[in-house]
Length: 177
Image (cartoon, rainbow, N blue to C red; front, side, top):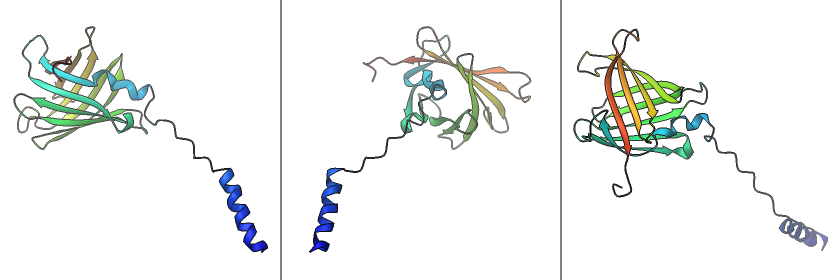
């Protein structure tokens, strides 16, 4: 009879003190460094700097629990595409991979410099076949809440730079969404 009671007592004791669930791990990507590219997150209308002619829409969203930022670029002409940006946990540098609807991929790397995100990468055929360049993109938050994406190209390995593109991202209002 003792062998019958012992399992019952053990079962009853375990029912009274349930095991505690493990503590939830802290969020992996909520550091100040992970917020370095938040200035770009949003729904945007995109214009050439100095122009009121819209050339694209762009959706920039935090993904994967805040560990990555995805851009969906939707131009009115030419190729669209997407980029994924993330803070590399090993190097502490931001990395961005752009894949265009033309099948080309560009890898950028950089970080926050004086409050702006600066990413640089080698872009083959950026201005046509055989016209490769080092591209430096600087994303800056402007006083009105818009974001400037200033792209510069260098064909001499960064010794000199020329503006390649200069875009202003203006937030869509709720009637645009």
